[in-house]
Amino acid sequence: MYLPLKQSFLKTIKLMDKKLKLHPLIEYLCSGATTVTLLKQGLDIVIGNVGDSRAILGSIDKDNSLISVQLTVDLKPNLAREAARIRQCKGRVFALHDEPEVPCVWLPNNDLPGLAMARAFGDFCLKDFGLISVPNVSYRHLTERGEFIVLVTNGVLDALSNEQVVNIVASSPSHTTTARDIVDSAVRT
Image 1 (spheres, rainbow, N blue to C red):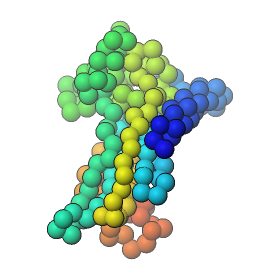
Image 2: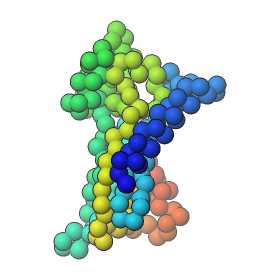
Image 3: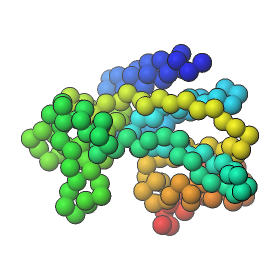
């Protein structure tokens, strides 16, 4: 199951990036997006991640407490493999002095655009300099201890921890308002 789904993820993401570039109403050169996608078949899941969106599992631990388990890696420019690829393509990776905790991808000869992720749809101005839209694809077999999985955007993760997201989902009074509860909490933080 894993290999065919991985190939499907790779094909789909490549096609989406190509279509984005062809869309007449989208400014694709210096704007883009991340994604995290999950396919579930029984207790098996395959996750495709482009950028720094995240999949988080809410699970019950051995003490019957709800815990968060991060299922994806945030594909930031300062990760060794990501930085090496970017530098090999003549892109630069560094953080600004006023934001030392935010490493970004920069053009070789300009302090532009300062993208805080190593993979993204769009942002074609950096595609020749190490930015890619190839998803990191992973597989996991769930157990009966898994309660739910949350797919969260990087904007929410700038404000909330994995634990906070899991606790909000667990305490949300209605499945129909859970996403709104997460966003409202991120905005308040």
